[in-house]
Image (cartoon, rainbow, N blue to C red; front, side, top):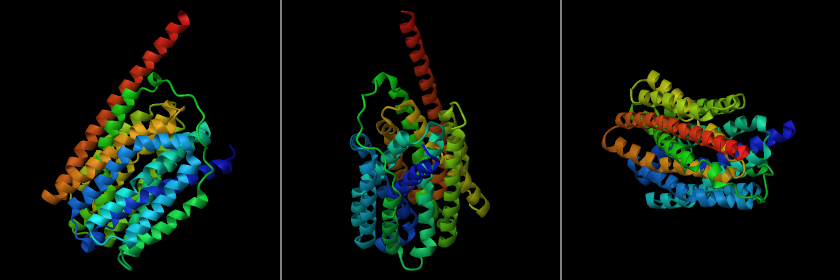
Amino acid sequence: MAEQSAVRVGAGAVAITTSTVLPVFLLGALSVQIGAELHFDPAALGLVVALYFGVSALASLPVGKLVERWGSRRTSRVAVCGAAGFMLLTGLVPWNYASLVAILLCGAWCNVMGQLSSNLTLARSMPEHRMGLSFGVKQASVPLATLLAGVAVPAVALTVGWRWAFVIAAGLALTALAAAPRGSGPATRDRAVPEDRATGALAVIGAAAGLGAAAATGLGIFLVSAAVDQGVDPGTAGFVLTLGSVVGLVMRMLHGYLADRRSGAHIAFVAGSLLSGAVGLALLAVPGPVTLIAGVVLGFGLGWSWPGLLQYAVVRLNPSAPAAATAIVQVGVYAGGFVGPIGFGFLATHASFTVAWFVSAAAMLVAGAGVLVGRRMLVAHRVAQERRSASAIAS
């Protein structure tokens, strides 16, 4: 593939994924202003975000099959148009908490379809030696969405109001249609052999990734509220969120760049990121500007920088059905997104943000250990495959 074509495909994947993941992170960044108007607290914010990811988890497997069947060309555009429409509704319609929840949940499938269609586009269109970087760049769209949400606090929410932030975001999302790559059409492939997918190991890794996602979700959703609770000015808190987003964006791309230069051990690097990121979450529990900045840098830079690397590893293991295979892991990640905000919001409301950050740090430690267990299962699966192949050749 020519250089320009590779850049076009990568930029399109970023545009699609950023547009479709933006609504939920915009809600988190603007939660102080939205909560003041619609009258809800951090626990209620955690509930709506949790339900959003819960619906995403339920939709992941069927949407993955749909993306494989229809192809990424069609599904990526459907996802962007859907996300833009629901963000416009969010800016114009909600008059209370219940109406906000209804609109957000109805649009949850857009994020799932945007993620999986981009995975399929990269798996089918990117050259092998750029695959890791392309997934890192694509997953950089999540901190990019958080960055845009953080900028929206001082630039829009504190000037003309939070509703205009959603309206503007809807218009920006539609511009992603111009950048969308051609993608792939409907799949015409043979089904992969189930025993070659290491489904059990992927399920364990997906569950551990879900726990890591549950711990990391608080970064994008509750960081502004937690910083304000510690006495930080809302505008400054928004800029700190922007800083973390930039660090996360760079680190996700660096993970991908390094993956293309390694022969393996991608899952081990995911585990290392989780274990190191737990330190950052623990630092956020300690009041003070130094610990706040250090915690944000470590939390975003390591604790929430691994999803692209994980998806790349899964695609390498399952080249015949990349969207369906990554959907297995995404079920865990979205389930973590369901559990995390509920738990964090409950702890923040009924205990304190300090307790919530410490519990999140402990959960991320366990997640790193779980990923290492899943990696051992993958290695054992690979050894068993090699022995079966050697036995077949010998016979």
